[in-house]
Image (tube, rainbow, N blue to C red; front, side, top):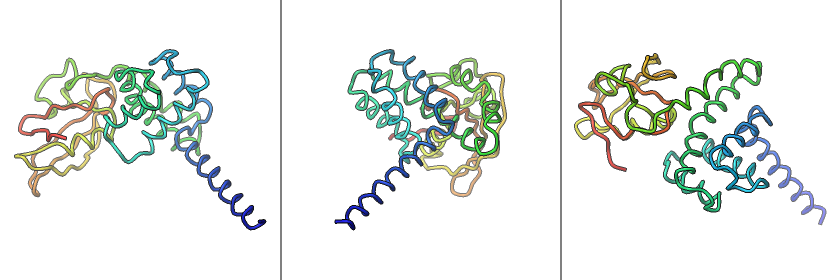
Length: 233
């Protein structure tokens, strides 16, 4: 009996360790992260999620999105609606997905890097991030963009996050064929806040151009630059 008691204790200890590890990953700044995320979700759905369930809902949704290797937004939206026991609309579930995949993921990335060095550094690096994301477009093209879509800095392709950019590129086709990409760095433009990532594209070893993507928006574009196409899911 003592042996089985010891085994159970080790199991419980391992589970607690796993939970603490996950919590540190999704809430690297602790209670301030939880408060910020909870406030944002309440601002999206109001009181549709009971007060005694909202923190658990936030933790569950954020864990799913931040730690999952999946990148299918439709699955995330459906999962969020299920977790909310269908108290929220599909549009609200999408807004929650966009927040966790975009702004909250960026917070996690910044704070995870800076917490071990200087928490205040993380706060300063976050800076205008909420404003940048709040300005994001919900359409395939950024309003006010000009020049050849996706091929110039003044008309970049909008996506929700770096992962959204990767998904967009994975669906991009040149003469019907998938492309390989190499990130060249980042730049900026007067048509959108947030940095713009530059990707060199090739197909079959042949250089086929450079595209510009801004991963601070509220939709992964479904529009292709001139000379390219988007593959169906």
